[in-house]
Image 1 (cartoon, rainbow, N blue to C red):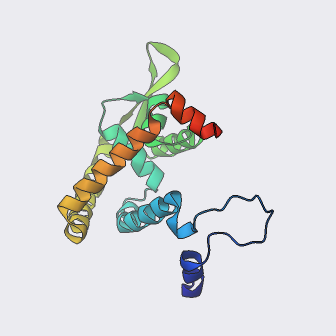
Image 2 (spheres, one colour):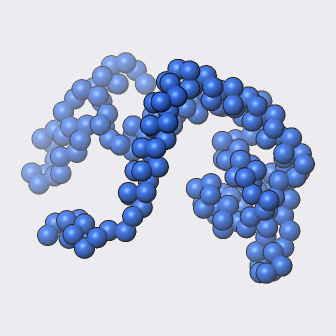
Length: 179
């Protein structure tokens, strides 16, 4: 993004008088939580992409392999939930990883419509190779931002996720409806 554009987005008024009189005033895009989270995610992923390229994996493929590395095997529904991937995307990723012999699938004896997915020995080797490099990057990130700040950030992210996933109370629901 050009510097001039970035300045306009971060310092300009949140809403111009160009729309209908009752148009909601939005906060400035630089103060948008989703945008701030995306900017931070991009800054973090920029550190890891060279490692992923070195083992010929996409970010989503890495996410799948990392999730599989933490369990002996899992069904596709559980894997989709663990990796925040939509089932059609996950299906394509699983096909690609299976062709590369990084994962294996077998029918679930409890539900023959479902498949159980696990890492192959080759998948574990890729995890080990990339994981060593990833841990070096984690150490560098920790050095740059500090262990305490990283721990605080991780705790805040867990707390916010938990708070936002909690069911709404009757008062919360009424407030959302504007009552």
